[in-house]
Amino acid sequence: MSGAAQQEDPAPAIELRGISKAFGTVQANRGIDLTVPRGTIHGIIGENGAGKSTLMSILYGFYRPDAGQILIGGQPVTIPDSQSAIRAGIGMVFQHFKLVRNFTVLENVILGAEDGARLRPSLARARRELQRLAAEYELLVDPDTLIEDLSVGHQQRVEILKALYRQADILILDEPTGVLTPAEADHLFRILRGLRDEGKTIILITHKLREIMEITDNVSVMRRSRMVASRATAETSTAELAELMVGRKVLLRVDKAPARPGAPVLGVRGLRMTDATGVERLRGIDLEIRAGEILGIAGVAGNGQTQLLEILGGYPEPGARLSGELVLNGQALPLTGSDGRARRRAGIGHVPEDRQAEGLIMDFTAWENAAFGYHDAPEFRRGWFLDNAAMRADAAAKIEHFDVRPPDPELPAKSFSGGNQQKIVVAREVERNPDLLLIGQPTRGVDIGAIEFIHKRIVALRDAGKAVLLVSVELDEIMALSDRIAVMFDGRIMGERRPDQTTSGDLGSLMAGVDPASTDPQGAMPPAAAHPGHAPGAGA
Image 1 (cartoon, rainbow, N blue to C red):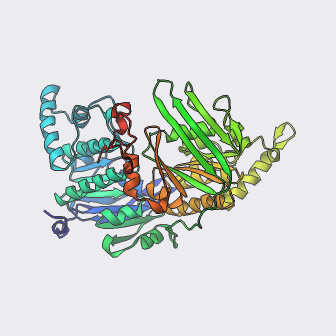
Image 2: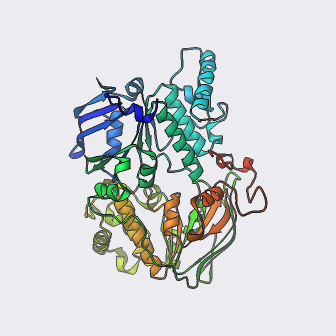
């Protein structure tokens, strides 16, 4: 049955009435009403902390609502746990996959859904059903392959197959394209449309408004724990949705003048890195970044970008073997024997990819975090002692300048939303006016209002004559911010492009290990066996 026909069904797939949930004094959901018609793809968007995840966790049985009612197919249901959600026909594909990496696809699909004590008959039946589902929904994947040997796109297919094997009619997907190549994302959208046209109902949680407009039939907007609007996607726009999310008009494009590159700031020559297990992570990286420009590094996560940032930031992986040359402002930088503090003294600021693991100490206050790495600066010292009052005053100024909410330097970092945590880290590094800013995944898990602010700060630093090395898995972000784009695959630079002279398809091919401009039919692609988790064309 088509999606259009399904929408005429008077009984919605999901109906939430007056759902409320509080955690202590924090009201996460306030009287939420939501109707999702059968056989549709329904987007849910909102800023960090708007209550989206709490609402979906209630629907999947992780939390119980304090008030309200859930109806599935027009019938009231109680969902005290995830097993009850599965029995009600609900499946969820999490942003971070729930797979056992050293199990096969088949073993992961059947795990927790075995037919009885004898495993062999269960596996045989599961194999037949898995093959049927994979063929019917274009979710082709080898059932005998280990999860750790699959690309991210194929692992996501396994998660969808798990839900379908458990007879889910409703699928919830949380930020499903965050780690996919453009080709993998396009394939996922084909799968979702196929599922919808077969009568399944999809709920899509994403912060990417372009994807909402491309794939959804309807979209609901949450702001500050309330549901503030629902729209037919064909009757709205990205500008309206952004304004509904934030409560004000938002600049959706990156407004920047052409770059005026100056002298070289950073040179990377023949950089190689082999990790402690003997796997070569960087395979001869050559880069140059000039003052007054942003060099973007595009690529699927896990292709060497993290190792590149760590080495440049002064903390390579323990036990790694390094070779090559680093030159900053004409002076050689040591590959080893340095640290992050020495890099900062040399003029390098660093916003790490994982703010919580590497950029902040979550139990420490905002003012302590705002000084980390710079606490030996003269303005923060009083003789032999740290000047805590000066650090507090400095943090208060940064919080005001970067609109961190709530504006309280005494709160621990864990009390701030992800977007405001990111603002603290960005403020700490940008306000030191570095010659070179290393910035990894600047807007990962950040809402649209904070994205706009962070992008403006990155461009302002460039316009002040500084060099910026930007690493992001968000291709739209790379193309909007960068003056030049280098694409990494399997530890190599596959090619370099200018944003106004390339397309997402061209960059996507490079991200998958294929150079469309190469006369060699294999391009610069290394043997697939060298890096099976990112095999060329995976997921395409």
